[in-house]
Structure formats: structure tokens, C-alpha cells
Amino acid sequence: MSELNGRVGGDPLISLVTSVPKVWDPEEDDVLVCRQVRVETHDVKTFLFSAREPRLFRFKPGQFLTLDLEINGATIQRCYTISSSPARPHLVSITVKRVPGGPVSNWLHDTMAPGKEIRAVGPLGEFTAFDHPAPKYLFLSGGSGITPLMSMARAFHDLSEPRDIVFVHAARTPADIIFRTELDLMARNMPGFKVVHVVEGEGGEPGWAGLRGRLSKEMLAVVAPDFAERTVFTCGPSPFMAAVRAILGASGYEMARYHEESFNFEELSPADVADIAEAQVAAGETPAADAAPAVPTFRVEFRKSGKVIECAADRFVLDAARLAGMRLPSSCTKGLCGTCKSKLLEGKVDMQHQGGIRQREIDAGMALLCCAKPLTDLVVDR
Image (cartoon, rainbow, N blue to C red; front, side, top):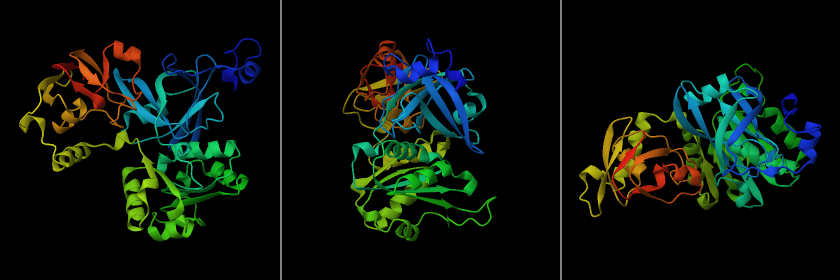
């Protein structure tokens, strides 16, 4: 806690916990200071942040922050779900897995240290059990997708809120289980909280007594026989969530009570982007260049890449770019996360966002391409 000393007048630590700091306001506050880095597994770290001045972080467990990073001269936005509990509001944490070739996760692992500062937007997001009260939950996570579910579990634990929760976490080996000890501790503290670790192999822990293999309908029926009665929250790699959807769908689960989220930017490949475009075409969305325009069509120039596309006035710029085969950073596609934030060098747009951009950024000419439709020809600094 030595990093906290010197930040607040008088006895800094006592002042921090006995005073009532202002609440973090994303419109006014956007700089986070790293206070500690914790090693969770061999390739996962948790980064704990505070504001520059004492602030309380108000968020719903399961929400995320969008980091605004300068890496090798480029500005990159990435969303990371908060892993900490809102019941401990003086700090906020994200838990990040190192990804081979991943520019942001590896930069955080290699660079972020106590005292370093980053900019962030949020908290944002709608993936939270707190907006979907239910008598029983089933949390299903794979790999680093555990973070939003851990925030929810920590919140219930910190608030001593009795909930019937089955928390199933899938990992490659026992050594890859994130928060293993803490989850087991929470299970001892909360009678209605059941933790099940599932690994694909024993790795360096021979004699593993837990479940092995991949999550299946049969395995789910064993660990949560009443899963059809539970509200399900899932987060993990895309194949993991696809498998969960398939299992639940084949079991006749009522999918209206199913919720999922994932921010796996660094697993997105050109093939993924092509698949998205093909899916849109298959859904009847003819590429703008070939469509017979029923509405005005505008020219959109991407200055840095040199790409030029056509975008109808009733189409979002991001959608038009994807259909033209461009790979632009994006995630929520709802004007929420801020990942596609871009500078408009010329032109005007009709933008209906949901909090992923600040008013001062809009005033400075920034726009979220996922929720912006052109009103004129555009020049985008991408």
C-alpha cells in the first residue's frame, strides 16, 4: 500500500478510507494510475488502478472500461471488463491474459507498473446479473472470460448476499485456473455458492481430482442438474460461448434468460472479418457499391489507409467499411464501448451513441463509426 502514501494530505491512508471522496465521473475523470500489479497465473495479471485524486468508482459488476492507449505511436482503444467488486470502490481492477501477438495485452503485461498512468472511458456495459435478478444463477466462464463473472461473484460475496450460484470455470490445466484460491474461499464462505473447475488436462498437477474435458451437456447435467431453472451468464472465447449456446439450445433451455459477453479483439482475424461481411451479405445486405441506392450515398475516405468507400445515408459507417472488406477496431457495435472511436477530418454524421464517447470528444470532432450515419461526404483519420 506504499503507493497510496503521499497522495492525500495528512495521514494519507486514513484520509483515504475515512473521507468521502468524489465519485469518478467519466466526463471529468479519465486518467487511471496503476497502484499494483498482481500475478494471477503464468500468463494472467491483475492491474489495480485508482484515480489521480481520491475517487470512488461506481459501477455494476460485469461492466467494462475502455482503455485509450498510445502504443508505438498509435492510438488504440480496448475494452476490458472490471474484475473487482463495486463494494470496494476505492480501486478498480482489470485482469488481462497475455495473448501471443496481442499488441495491447502484451503491452500491459510488459509495461504497466505502479505509478504509470493510462486514460480510460467508462464504466460501461449491460452485462450484469444486477440488472437481471433471479433466484438461481449459472455462471459459465472460459479462460480470461472469468473477469466479469468474478466481479459479480465478488460483489455478492462482499455484500453477504445469499445467492444460489453455480460457477463453472473452464481452463486448459489447473495452473491456468484464474482466481482458483479465492473462488474456493468464497465457496466456503457462502453456502449457496458452488464452484466447479473444469480442465482439459492435468498439466503440471498430476492427480487432479476435479473434472476433466470440455464442457458438455452431460457434464452440465452433473454439476448443475437444475440448469434449466437458472439464469445463465457466460463469458469466454468465441468457441466456448458457441459451445455453451449449442448445449443450452439442444437442451431446450429458455434462451431469454441467457446472457453473454466477450471482448476478444486480439483473436479477430481477417477471416473473421470476411465471415462477418459474408454473413451480412447472406442476410440480404448487398454491398453498398453494388446496391441500387434508394437513399443518398456519400463518399467516405479513410485518410491513413487510403481506402475510399461508398456509404448510404441509412447505413452506419462501420457497417459500410466492413462490407467493403476493411478491418476497423470495433466491439459492441452499439455506440457503447468506444472502441471504434475515430477522428472526423471532414464531414458531418448523425450519431446516436449510448455513452461510449464524451461530449468534449464529440466537440473535438471524434465519432463512433458503429453508430454514425453520414450526412455529407466524410474524411476519417483511419
